[in-house]
Amino acid sequence: MGLTTYYELTGKRRGEATELAAKFKMRGMDAVVVQAAKEKKGTLITFDEETAANAKVAVEALTSKDFTRKPNSDNSAKTA
Image (cartoon, rainbow, N blue to C red; front, side, top):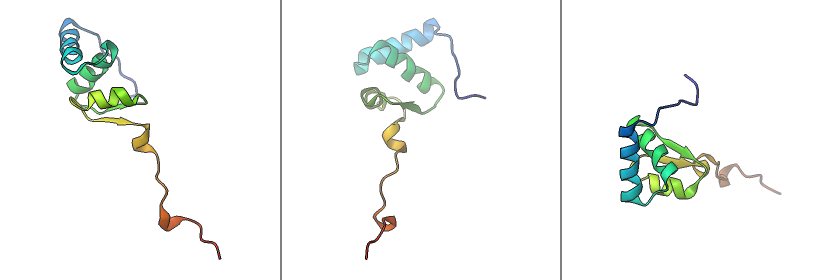
């Protein structure tokens, strides 16, 4: 299975996305993506901080910041 999967936007999915958009004040396309993640019990990964914040009410949502390494003070170069 690849990284990208396509799903048809059926009437049922559209209705669920509409409910998410109205309930959590999401933009339409954001609600469609969140609905798909929720249906598949998946994690939403996005570069959009606002989308991630809104999505967290329905699914686990991560952004690029969640994958960025933080400097480790123990491994920093020491000077003499």
